[in-house]
Image 1 (cartoon, rainbow, N blue to C red):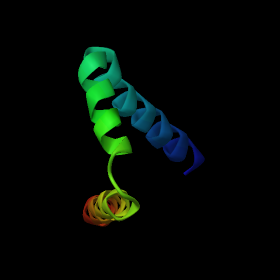
Image 2: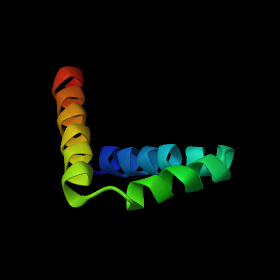
Image 3: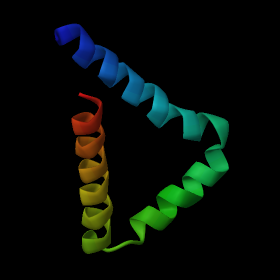
Image 4: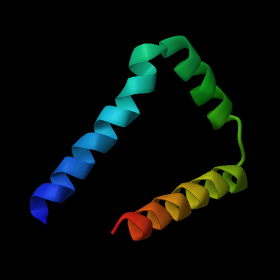
Length: 61
């Protein structure tokens, strides 16, 4: 169980690092547009990410 958690964390870090590594200019533009969003929009995207992640975990488990 503990090894799976560390492997999942490592995979998240790999996936999070791919976009800025492959296209730093596009990542910077996306991050700048994210900074211009209001709190409600950011919370909505966060909630959607959590819901999709939990759905995938439930579906795969």
